[in-house]
Image (cartoon, rainbow over all chains, first blue to last red; front, side, top):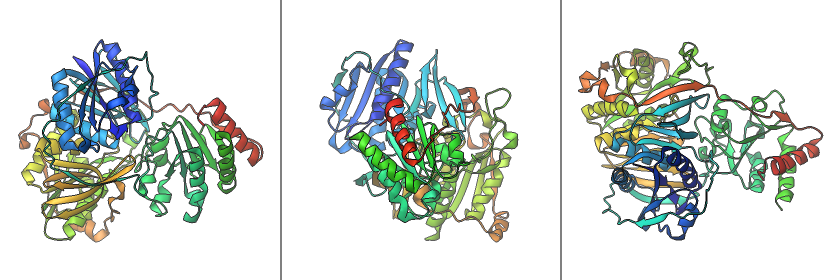
Length: 320
Length: 258
């Protein structure tokens, strides 16, 4: 009987792995179970220090330079077998693109249910999860009466919390013989248009208010100054001004940054579906009636072509 | 080439959602329904693939007779046949059970390629297609933005956070569509008329050799709520310089976010 947390890496441990561990740790404590982690990828080595104080007893490390990138064929049997070996009754993963694919497959192989993209979960005699549905317009509180009970957590919604500084023991595991049906031909890191929006601490997005594609840099410069990922509304993507991987919303990415800055975005329902769980929402729009002002924390009614450059300079000064 | 498309009819998320009296679901009486947007991309990708040669497209959904309306849309977009899995106990199925039932149809159809949307925008479950592949022991690739067939394999692009992966996947396999993969062509009136003459069959779980009791969900909804909106809704005052200065101050000092 134990809790197993899936520690996602992409070369290095991802913040979402530490968030999942934070939640798993609280659940393990409340359920009176031990917490173990599984790590698959390139050498874990001193990164294990990053896992200190998260209540993880043991990290099972399957190290193989060839598995730096996710592979269904390799990852799924490892997680299934380890879950069975440890008698895991709860499995917590990350609701990233690869985490969702991995957990869906593992759940199928184990014959159990799975709740994807929960914004919170807790132990209350059974595993409970808070799950946004209908594009975030409804929040569902569910109980998972299955064993193992499986949940993936939305990135960026959990503050990483450490108790003490105990570092987990690392158990090196031999890699099972790899039989990869699907072959990775190419991995273009930070490829053109591919932005890591979902784990960004700040997201600055441009909407139809920029008028023409040539004006996008006005907002993009603000994103750069804030150290933010650059997002866009559906209108901007559908007009072909920017690659769809920048799109925030119903048919784009769901983001939960610390700060979301909407520039020239009206705030249509389908856009809100992608950003309403952000911690602080800032809206810049010249239309005081825009819906975005109804869901923002701080609003500036004004011309983005005037406000954004001023804000870019002010942020540069504030950040030194 | 036999292509199966898995699709779902879902409430338009632009609808007004109200929680039902029992607080464990939504009031469906005022909802407008659409084909889940990612499934439109899945149907279109099947049509594009078939356009290059011989083949048949079978569109499959699991639900109630009301769902036939959106199967018809898929037929009008270019699918050849439709299958509705329906049963008096269909609402009791969990994701595991739904995948078992869909996989049974895919197996019967002897498909080479299965397309589905990356998730349905009602429960945003994001797991059925991957489970179908696992039930069948097939390969799968999720959230793809490009599909190219080369003989017995498919080359696909898959976006993950901050990187673009190019994968070569052996067929038969299941693929889930992300928005960038294509632009759906919405059906024209003559095709809608023709679609009504295309075959549409209903299958029960028993027809597929399955029993609802074995497929029942083990996830129970305790309560549904509308999300709380606790926003400050504070409009910053003064001229542009003052507004910007105040915004930087609150982000830095009050929100500790800069």
